[in-house]
Length: 532
Image (cartoon, rainbow, N blue to C red; front, side, top):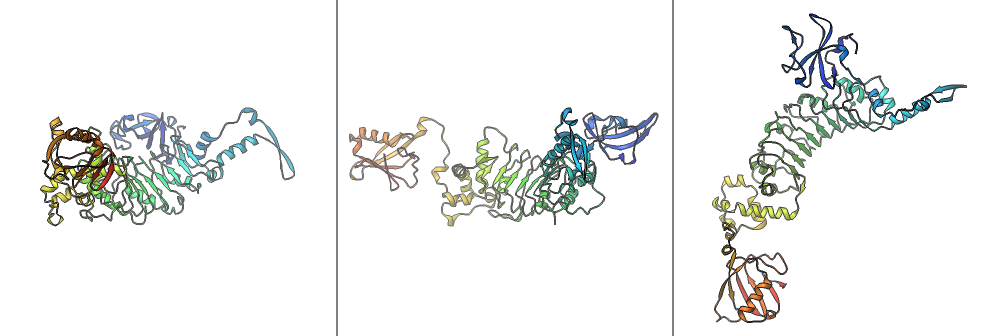
């Protein structure tokens, strides 16, 4: 740029040696002669002062080292949208093709042209464009009126992130010419709002709007949303946003909202967006949240807030209490959760146990941290949860007889799904709640009582056997003990609770009775005949 300054330079976005800044001052800075631009850098470490020189304040900066004075000819004020597209997407023709002559007829007169094929080829290339990425291309304005609409009428997706756009007016001038525009990324642009507010139809086809690191406020977000009646996805990462008011007639079609890295957002502010009717995905990574409550829903009930929310992301926060996950069980539509890198979910030796506890706490969850929850994993998690807190349940007034169940309010708040798990799997038995003994051989032996149902006068034998023995080995041992062929033994296992994880193997429990009879080679478990 030349040293000549125009009045509208203040507020313009500029680039200097790869660094972006905003012009805050234009004029003379004595005692040095000639015009200067006072700029506030996006990166305050790039500057030298706060906008003052030798005691005179020429402009103000948000950071004490955010400002510099620069000669106008050192500054890049950018290029227009259409020129940037041509620079990036139009294929260059060779010199021979540029000089190629062609005769065309205009009316009745033949006209000799040079480079006509090249021009047609360029226009064809631009007209086919549907997706355009102009990130960091120094785009500062729309360019000649109507030029974009004529050259690139089919563009649907545009990335204009990290450019030199300084005003929504310029964005609107571009969007007005892109009637099929569905996706627009304006991240890392510092945009002033237009003087007028009548922008109906400008973004009528827009579905995705990305405004990360733009410094936009919540009030401005709502103003933008009014221009986008069909908006489905809105990205607002790293803007220091404070949700100050409830959206009334805007954002009603939004399905995804990303509020990541807005550290000023708290639990109470989330209530203001809790009734967006179509919100399915909410991204709250790195906002500093530690708790959440849905006061409209009691224990075991569902909240009316976030009625359509299916996927919640709360990575990199301060979640350290299990009550957070208990509350999430109140969300009626929640199916997927990501909660990585929180104090309660850090990757350590207990990571698998943490995963199981979260699964047991949120009954409708299908995916946790992008890993599917299979039915077997859910069953295991819920059974382990039921067992792990069984003694606490008993101490809080839990009883195997439902009529005698008198659970404390404190226990119900801490374990709101426990009663449901008892209905689903049965209340925990006393033997399930016994403290695990140290792993020694004597602690792994099962005491078995062996009876002879056909010989009542025979004394009951009591033996200790390893719990890992298969039925086949038990029969072999009994054959030697009783001096009876294995093929003549029939074992019937008496127990109100017994599981058979395999066809030829059963895990025996302490103090269960075994009946022996001389019959066919089969095993009876709770009335279920299994061949061994």
